[in-house]
Image 1 (cartoon, rainbow, N blue to C red):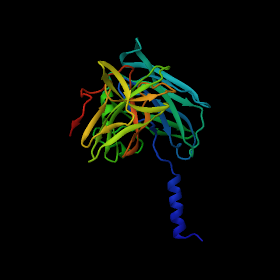
Image 2 (cartoon, rainbow, N blue to C red):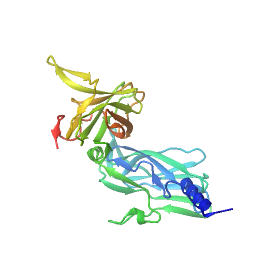
Image 3 (cartoon, rainbow, N blue to C red):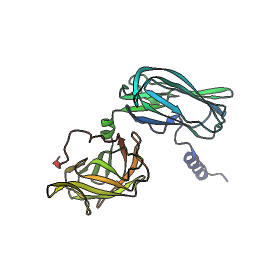
Image 4 (tube, rainbow, N blue to C red):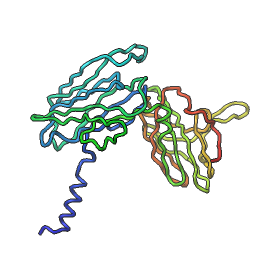
Length: 318
């Protein structure tokens, strides 16, 4: 017998099995101006009940040096056009490139999900803010056009078929906008540098604030692709600058902010199994003696990049 209780249960199951998103979106919705960007376009469904056979992207002027990834079972086509302005890419002046990507002759059922991928970069002269990538899905007897762009001041969530968006930020902004909290501890601006393929170690830098009434200690953590994470400091010993591990961790006193930066306190990512790549964030975790373990994402700056901002590596009171 179908009761109200069973109906409620069925509704819960239906909600649990529903897609997490209903619009076409990018997996990574933020990119750094002048840096590499990997676009993973997520297509959640077809045109009504029909299967999708074509996916077309029209690239905005801010997306340059684009290379689409071939997809098994689909034909790949690109259309080339001039850039809004020329730019230098590894010593070569770039005046034109891919402006449209078309995957066709595929078969994505309406009740299935798929991803379409390209690599590129954000133009060095791009302005901070959101850009939009119009996407069109074509089916046997119709299409689903994700092409609506919000007017100034309009919320994109008000649109029925919004174009997928990417938020463009400057490197310093990307390093400072995001913070993570656990207990009384706040982490801001975690970053590392890109490394050569053979590099065995990398450094980690960030700011950690203790908003509590008792000291806590940063003792280590984890970093994707590294064997272990150690807390280090640069110190002058017998007139010589040396690096040493803080075996008992770095104390963060109540009400203080400690900056980990090149030449001072820092993290060491040991036994790297893979290089860190400029513009590609890396997931890691920090371990505190009292607060516990906190997962964070490190922004990856160019090889040899200086510490962001102008603050020194000392303690200061709020």
